[in-house]
Length: 438
Ligand code: SF4
Ligand code: SF4
Image (cartoon, rainbow, N blue to C red; front, top):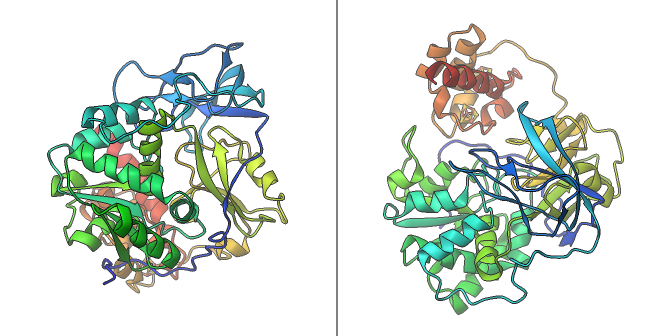
């Protein structure tokens, strides 16, 4: 049986790279590694300009609070520690490292895989924390904190393999090429959480991955099952995923653990396994590079901190000037200032889109009260009212219509025939409401 949720939209999937194997990116000349790649406190540098660092060496950590340590993704010399503005408009610090091309790993990373069968829950969580693993589906929440917050509260572990955003196929390729890493990571999560069964949730547009995973689970992972969900956006949002599989509704303001569930991304599960078995930090990730301006779309294995320009170059360059360069998917990703933006732990895709691929936006018109935005909203909100209240500066009115419960999936703006940038209005309302309430 295929599971689903109410609302959502069917969009052109553009999964052009589904058959493109993961290819290691040619070594970048320099990397600029942001000291804040996670939700929480930014890290402070552990190195100075002129220092030699090895791949996997810790180069940033915070003294307290919620954070993930940051590691070097190459071996080489620190040539700058610089401040800049992030794509979200915040000031952040990058550690710039000149790659010596030697790819020398730090001594903390094991040369041989260690057995993980006897690791205790605390050892699994500690390895995840030391490796700087955070959510790799985009949210970038520190994984060790997520596991700890779920201890003793959850009965359901879901591994999110939906990958519902158009274009992105990084998880799909991971499931096909390194399924054991995902499955072993899932087993470690089960042990850490004290659960006996877990479930991989895959959209039905990945038939090859579903077949492979089901066979592997039958042969060697009886504690794990594979559940299939209908291909629909935003199926990968954890609220929709939880509802589709368990029929439990996540009330506004609550966490999945409050209703007995916890969800991890497939690549995060693989990173947990590598952290436990190899002490390998999260310093590289799979990135889908696509869009109608990319000459040769690919899935690349990329060191964190690599500029987008190096990824584009590895894909044969641009075949036309992009209207927009996007970090992440076209629905929930962010347009960036330029191609020197670095890849972070949360960058699942780099998209170079022309005007045609951004649907030839014709500008905004008056709301015609068609109600389509209401019908597709997976959070059962009134997006048209939120936008209208925000437009006139009535933020409490926007709040009363659920602005703070919006997951910013963009379905309402996508479907709106009047071209109203509803998500931008919701984001503006949320920003003001947060400031007023802090
Ligand atoms: S209001 Fe928010 S949750 Fe609802 S469709 Fe729009 S962006 Fe998605
Ligand atoms: S989809 Fe657009 S035009 Fe239709 S009700 Fe919503 S905001 Fe108005």
